[in-house]
Amino acid sequence: MTDHILSQNSPAARDIDIARSRETRRHRFNAALRYALLTGVGLLMLYPLIWLIGASFKTNSEIFANPGFWPESPTLDGYIKGWKTSTPYSFGTFFVNTLWIVIPKVIGTAISCTAVAYGFARFDFPFKKVLFSALIATLLLPNVVTRIPQYLIFRDLGWLDSYLPLWVPSALAGDAFFVFMLVQFLRAIPRDMEEAARVDGATTWQTLIFIVVPLLMPALISVCLFQFMWTMNDFLGPLIYISSVDKYPISLALKLSIDTTEAFEWNRVLAMSVLSLAPALAVFFLAQKYFIDGISSGGIKG
Amino acid sequence: MSGDNRFLGLIYLSPFIIGLLVFTALPFLASLYLSFTNYNLMNEPVFTGLQNYIRLFTNDRTFRKSLWVTLVYVFMTVPLKLAFALFMAVILNYKLKFINVFRTAYYVPSILGGSIAIAVLWRYIFADVGLVNMGLALLGFEPVNWFGDPTNALFTITLLRLWQFGSAMVIFLAALQSIDKTLYEAASIDGAGKWTSFVYITLPLITPVIFFNLIMQMVQAFQEFNGPYIITQGGPLKSTYLLPIYIYDEAFKRFDMGYASAIAWVLFLIIMALTLVAFWSSRHWVYYAGDKRS
Image 1 (cartoon, chains in turn brown, green):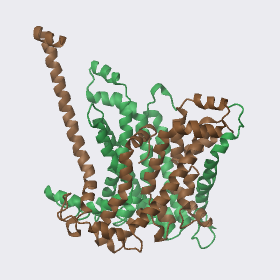
Image 2 (cartoon, helix red, strand yellow):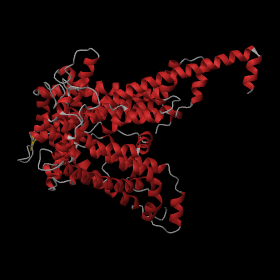
Image 3 (cartoon, each protein chain N blue to C red):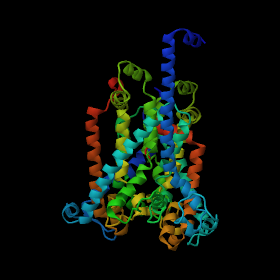
């Protein structure tokens, strides 16, 4: 209000007013430029995915004839034939296999990483520094250097062509990154409640389950989601360890489908690609807050 | 608590300790040993000293090609990806509505990018008559031979990684948003322009995050496997034959475990050396607020 009265009266205030509106105009221009750039880059980035969805409903002859997203004569052919696959198994089998790899792995990761992070964040014990350094070293150690002997160990254990090589290392807190993330999170939580519980006679185990785990939940959910995504996408692990087609996860099944005669049945491959991306996309959109929080706080590969 | 057994923490750590010994430490040492042996899974490993390494560096053109391709790939991908991620984060870091929508949209490729389905998609959109060439034709350009030409193929693989700039961008954005706004106001009162503020305020304050992203992206880029394995199978003329694919082929197709271990160790030593260089140089360019080096 005062602004308004002043601007009518004094020339100086009018100058300020003009300067301010120039400022607003510059802000609007700046924002418009940013929106244009962001939208342009966004469309360019997401168009391949949008095209993928459209193309999965196209006929084989249309896929490489029309850059548009919308199919001219939409067909479910790709989905129906793709689901049958060229193997004796349907794509459903590969989906179930994937879940059968992913779910135990996620549960094992959550339990073991929580316990280990709790140990690191809340206890003093001999060799703590050495073990924590080992954790950090594992974090930076490229998998490529341990892969071959790991394979030999699993062979000697008789675990080849089973899911054990994919489950067991994670159930032993093998993903150092998650442990590290949880330790960082735990260090930021005050210990008052835990100490109160201990004074009241709770064991460390009870304290962990009833006090720490509920507080840790947001970080723990991030861990589970990332492990879910990475395991869904994992290709090299199954490629090395799984040899029978009936145990294939979707990543191997897709690779198989581009190698076999289906290579000329493009819409089948695209349709199955859409289906294989669907769970990850659904989980991401339902829980994106945890992804963004997880990545911004701890910093995550990707 | 004080009354606790001092080994209690170790009980909670026991899964980690077992995993560390059995699946990390033992394989780590074993692969070093294997790299000095001839081992094809049929017989026991035979110690052959430095023979694998001598063969690698004097008598293996595939290795030299593969090493070169890997280095080109990493040094092309990592700086481009980080620069683009930072650029987009700066654009996003402004009073905009829908900032979360954009952030989410840009992050989607990072979530899906490593999957086989996306590698398959890449094959289709960069095919001779694929989406990209159709788009170029609409704009009046000549089609590009994305995979058939050895000089283009590696670049096409690089694009797949650049496309996943979202995760690095989200980390940059979080860092940018945590910068104290009064610093910019003070600078603008002193007459600093946008660019000056960016170079002298923004960049120094986010160097820890740049450093973190640099290390993470580099370690991952050196281990890229899925993209080139699915899209180009290392071809044409081994122009996308990255070292991890060579290691995989030697180990799990030719079952030459000793030789594959030697290649893996060379790759490991390169990654370690570059990581150490980055850590060492970080004293000179990474700024920690209050100089808390934690």
